[in-house]
Image 1: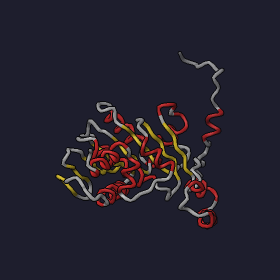
Image 2: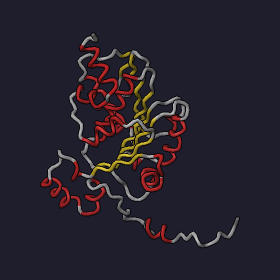
Image 3: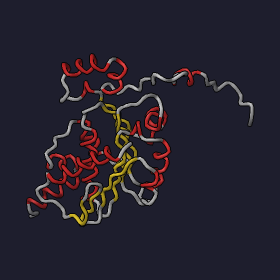
Image 4: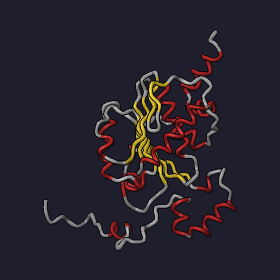
Length: 252
């Protein structure tokens, strides 16, 4: 007979949702889908305060624990934001009754005794060029991460066939997050969670936010809409309508 503790650990290893419950987080249905998703490309267009960062941090820690020698990179527009995502990883780690040992533990990274590493980084190309063989990249506030940085980190996933999860609220009709959401094709799984689908956000609070923020920012921050930036001369739809497949190019 398998020892009960070993059996529970096996259940947590096979099911990240059980691991999430183990660290004290009961996931919503969509969060459970994210935790159990085994594909390589995932876009999360989610409302503010919906729990996207907590969910992906838990998924990253689960991967690090149960896949030895993993390399998990946490990236965002700023180091402060990456550290906040890393703090959620550490919170989940600290919630474990039987935690794996750490060979390294600081404000920016941790190394587990199984050889797995979790490292938080800002969106600065000079900080990531030395990494290779990455198992998973978690890109927080992806809509505000520079496109050049996005192009710099994607090749790091080639060797290990690594996973990439981009999570964000929209930031206008621009950048790689918007581009992949609209035109990235079937390579990406897309999950959209407006605030109205989040049980922790009340309708009364949403109405307060709408009155406070105004229509445009409310639609962007809470309803997951890619609204047009106010400083745009030609909006996205106007540009798209200017293309005509029936017009032959001037050059071959």
